Image: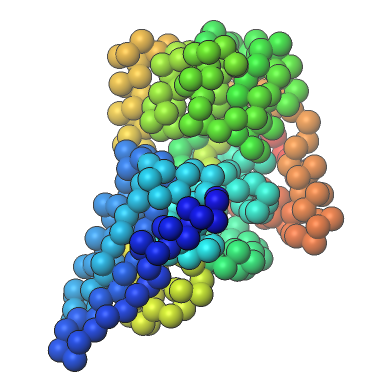
Length: 355
């Protein structure tokens, strides 16, 4: 993010500015942001659940504090790839961070992207993800390197693949250029596809213009960014649900807030997690129906087809874990903990990545 634009935004929004009279509620100015438009479930719940929950808690607590919110969604205050930096620098004080957009800065958070074919639903993934974080505290602590505190993570619906042509096996991708963002490109290793690293925002136009022929993503992403309109063959591979987004705050500024406000933020972040998961499921069904009515062809892989794809991949999780270990991060610990918690939750892994 350019410093000039950040500075301009900072001057406009201020930084947790406090103003209070002797008999008035203390007014606190806070900027909340999300890269996607508010139709996206993670941002929709920031706007419709997180913020109203904070306000409700503070009002119920006697009205001593009043939040004056500045809200910026759909890249109005920060681009998709700049939200994390905006929070780090205090331009925004709280926001939805999409972890796959921050692969280099948040390598440990990529575990559900780097260990594919895990939990097939986000309810199970949420339970497993919480237990992983409890056993690997280094994950939460790492956000502090970037002047942030992660208040809560949310599990998103499983990812599939959108293509311009029908597929019945991973082998059908051979020779085709397929777009992918960051670590999601690993899902295509071993398929024979040519991976084109590209942000999902540009997927529709780039598929239309022939830059590539498909893109992996969730039902929500495929609908919101109209990927299905350019690549109408939706194959429900179910690469697994992901711990994809989180509510993060600027750590230094958050510490300056009165304790009741901090507490309200923490409670609201948990409420956001629950609402995000619920609305993801509701909208997944709704969006899939709309895409089908608009001409999309939907095919669902069975267990054998999924297993075939998983077995065609190199052992990406081990490569990823070993790489983190060498950098002093608990990669192997995350991998083993995640796989153990999947099994404890009743999930039979499509492939035993830890063995």
